[in-house]
Image (cartoon, rainbow, N blue to C red; front, top):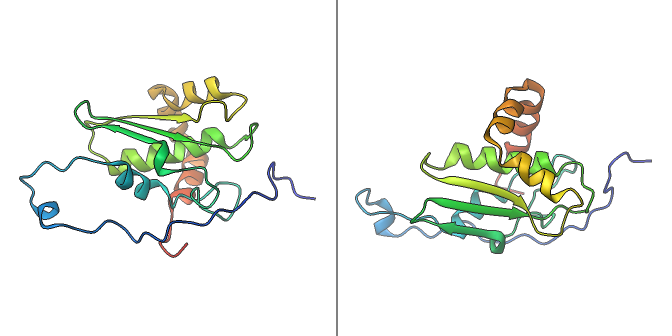
Length: 159
């Protein structure tokens, strides 16, 4: 008997996209390079699920269509969809997404992480926890939790 909440998740086909096609202007440091949803998705799609040996993209937890960006206001909103409405890993998944983006994006960007509306029974509580700076900082001070986050972020491109 498995003690996983969702022992047999649906596995989705992942995008065969091998990354962005670089253009000459991408190399010019004097040209403003705004972020887009494809670029943010590329940062989070290979995050490992904490419960399964699969990525968030393979479980359809992250989707490019759920990412909104306002470069003028330096704001990024990432919504994700847990595999089940009572997923106990939702906060950890959101924390992994937040940490990946904190480590990858310029500090000027404000990032909001939310579960997709109606996708989790504790949606409000999870969203509040994921977007509270003090709670996030406290979570990352826990060495065991930080180790789990780092394991989820240790990705390989071959997935």
